[in-house]
Length: 444
Image 1 (cartoon, rainbow, N blue to C red):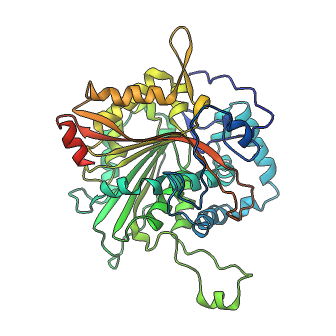
Image 2: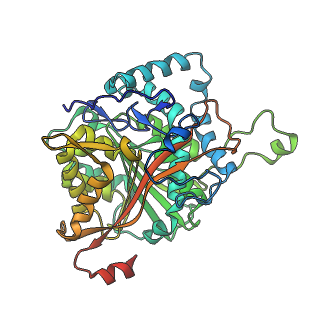
Image 3: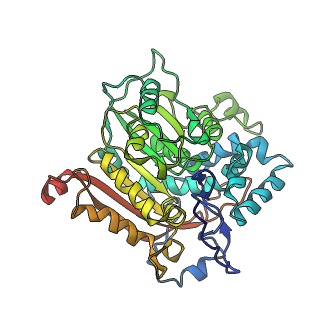
């Protein structure tokens, strides 16, 4: 078990918040601890003095490269997904004490206690995932052209998703499976003879994330991709998120309820369509309870190719990679990234979002020097340009040291106050190492 890093002493003007992640490695660590500093209204003045390059933005504008096409109405719909799913919890008298208990566990870095119980994950998702979902949705919208380029034909020689998942799972079991590895959730919509056909499919593999990533993917699919594109999502985490994912998925696929305070005209018109409509646009939504650092290249094949014909996909590490470096160590995390490189299909994208600046640093070497996560990431991924891995090399397409995600003036409504947040973002694409640099540029 790797001992977690020491908690930084908080500045009095900075609000400490958790990340939307579960626990890795049998509850010994979290992909999102209470010690992350995000931007909020109180921290704006202090954080603006940092040396990182910062870009101002709001969720309803396109001033940032990762913020496009989102509107206040659409953001409110995303928040309503969480409000509807966790309504009974949010309105319960037990919510505040449960929330305080989760906060205390996170403060003490007791991640097994914080994330080991499904009801704690409900509390976590209701409290911290909404803002994350809005931010992640804006990031995905900002890379829409790159995502459209990796959508693939829906024609496939693979059996239906469920069958493919079972076959892949049986061939890629961990050498020593842990109890949590047995949990798998499938929220794939049931096919029907009248379901429309789709000309292309976008597959996303989200490593170390669940609730916020699911809603952000639904936002991308519903508001930014052509109606002819369906989506497949695989979520991997070692905490028991399956019940949360199933509940959120059902809300995403169900028309929202009409408020009892709505006007007669609105009531007569009936509910709006579901966020994803028709349901068949979400070709599959799978949750795999796994420790990604223990999967190895063979184990990664299952979630990577789940329900696919081997075409390119998007892999996301959203507020996850720095925790892997910190708690899993540079060696294990490097091996994971290189294993990922060795199996990911040509043309695939890797999206990394994490805390900016000094909040994403890792200790390395006997002298315990601290290195920025971004430096370590580039050293590993761009090192494949000199020494390809399994015939693959990565190229960086986009990089931003520090971006603000702000909700100022949006007028969004949610039972819990929403905070602004700040993040760094890096986007990579994998190429066939046998291609020349010019061929790679032409292929982008």
